Length: 210
Image 1 (tube, helix red, strand yellow):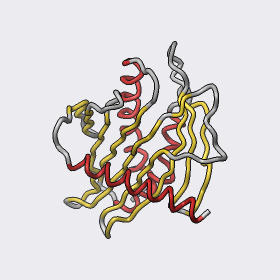
Image 2 (cartoon, rainbow, N blue to C red):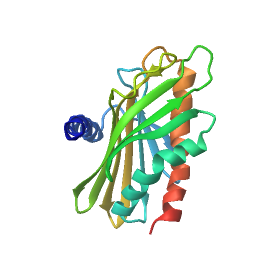
Image 3 (spheres, rainbow, N blue to C red):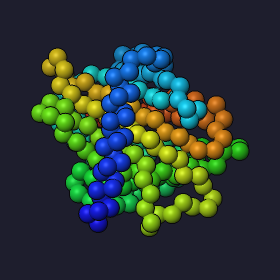
Image 4 (cartoon, rainbow, N blue to C red):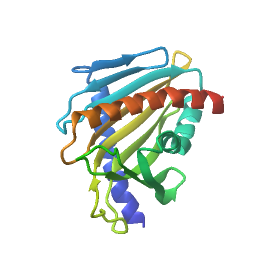
């Protein structure tokens, strides 16, 4: 078990470094939406699916925000998208800051096979005022790829919270490879769902944290 977690942590650390490097690269980002709640950006990637970055400020403690995210973000997204997420579970829990989640999604678009993801997530304290969650795809011998679906690759999904000017500055960054052929309509739907989700999630954070 310990060696298993060490391997996942090594992968998560590399994913974190790659994601933070992407955050520091200010070139090639295109504004996807600039609203009262947030600013969303997209950027082309080698996988053919745009990298999405969402940024917002809220009057909350960064540590409490990251704790709420770790406990609730995926569950709220699933609850808001019952037509899209078919199956989900916390597959393995290694500690109160380390786990593997499984999700199966079906966009119900002709010619697009359902996608599943199996990803390891860890909550990090970078310093006294900076906290993060990094998720990245992993494999596990007890969760083989199903014959009727395609296993997508979450290269990294980073949620970064820091204290800035008396506020909690949140940046979410997600990059994945859906594998196989994906119509543009599927890509656009995915971006739209994620941005709309964060608008709702901001309200949930404000309602449930101090």
